[in-house]
Image (cartoon, rainbow, N blue to C red; front, side, top):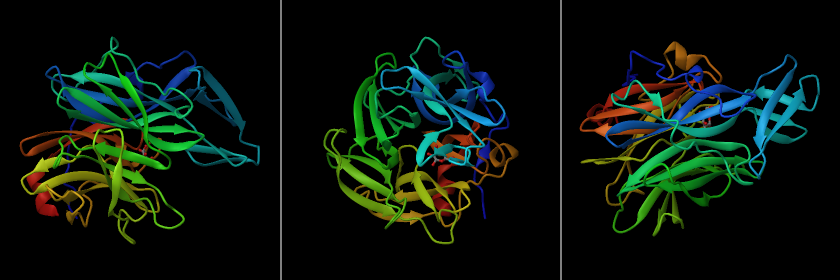
Length: 347
Ligand code: MAN
């Protein structure tokens, strides 16, 4: 089995201690899953910053954003038999799910793609309104012409869906609401139209019958999506047996659209693999990784807030090289390079 990633020697390149909390009383717990793009001749990452209040023994404190933008702090006692803490990411109390951290998105930039600095003059992007009270996460950034389109996971007590923002200058951000309702996430818009249509990969969930599969949708305007098609199922017994979802926008190659995706098994071990889609008919899957192209093997990928995770939603392609930014163990941000030719050969 070949792990094709050439990890940065500097990994992790960004850790929670590298950014300031967004509000007094909050602590940055995890820095993870960045979107990536080029802007003003620099490399930019749109970080997911996951925060929570300082913890006290025997209790879990978490923050949620009220629909009016105010922070509410909730506290749960571990001795309460109605409190279920079996997943460090989610707290279930009396049948209601909460996230243990509240995420927003923040910009950093770099000249060399490895050493990133904060960009405090640009706005941070926080959840807004009643569909984002548990925060916004894992944003994919796709540039089409002068406009950047941001597809992110919007989380609230209503469920998990996909929100869309757009911007040309990263100072004025337009919000277009929710484009895929719950349960849906992992949405990546293609960076060019095919035969006049926009396309996006997305991941609806149908656990009672079906599963957490990767789908393709078509749109005339990036706001209204239809003509849904299912591209790839999870595979029993494989590294992507429990769920899979798109990474960032697919990369156009001479052989097809190359999509780097994540898959997890029943033990919640997250690896990366690739799909090759037909250039003109992207609903046709030409090839798929049998084995992962990247697995959580480094120490920082094996242990952390949620261990055994490599998860990507941001990369930059340049010739044969794709520089992939990823979250390791849901704790810190790392980088790795791949040869596109080597990924294609492995399919
Ligand atoms: C979720 C994803 C990510 C996260 C992984 C691993 O399904 O949406 O936010 O990195 O699980 O915890």
